[in-house]
Image (tube, rainbow, N blue to C red; front, side, top):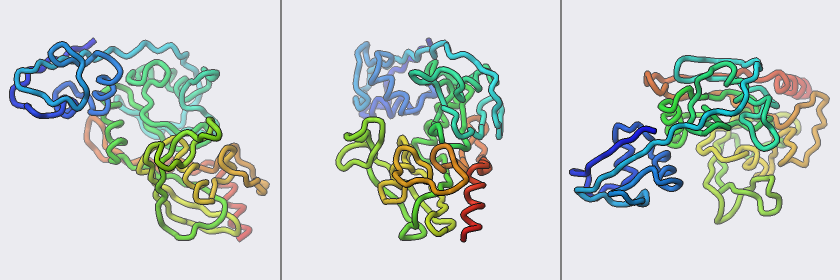
Length: 307
């Protein structure tokens, strides 16, 4: 466990979380807030305070940063499509059908199992189930993902995503034609009250979510679109597109449209195409591209032939 102590002399009136996020403990503000809410790791004068506590001169603030849990998930020799790797990050092109991390009932065959075999050094911030995982893709969504190899990289990347400095774009094949070539969908997303296995756009509840879209190609009954996420909610693109009446081709959860194409796809036609970020150590701007998978290329070839 790493411990930090700060004697307040010139930060009177500043919020506790804001003050700590600027100190040499290298913790993001969101991670500090989690420590404050879920543990007694951060104390002011020996007492637990809220994140919005206003500091006073003479206060003594202590932080006990917990050690990451030891990993109990077994490494597995599963091939990875690695787009980039160094001592701090690894960027992969996740294949469709692969679960990102273990969950109840799924403890093998995941991206985490494969990463543990390949890397041996992953960030421990998300515990033994999700080591290194900064952001996720649905099981049946393919494409580019970045994984952190150490806690410093993890915190930096998570902050970039939270502050919308990391840019993610997706390609999707949807049912029907959008009313406009460019636009955005805004709508809070939360657990569906009608089906707890699904997410839904909720009014007055849920978390804010915004998806930007651009139509790239129009076919007789389908469209190829590009989406950019301004937030990262569960199933966000799938939920937003279904909400405006254009569910993703092949989506088993949010689409009632049957797939009439001979070229089938396992799950939704959704691919994480690009990821732009700043390297957590060097500060270099980086852009990664994951080529469109074979199944989506097949479908697009067929759609283009049909006109």
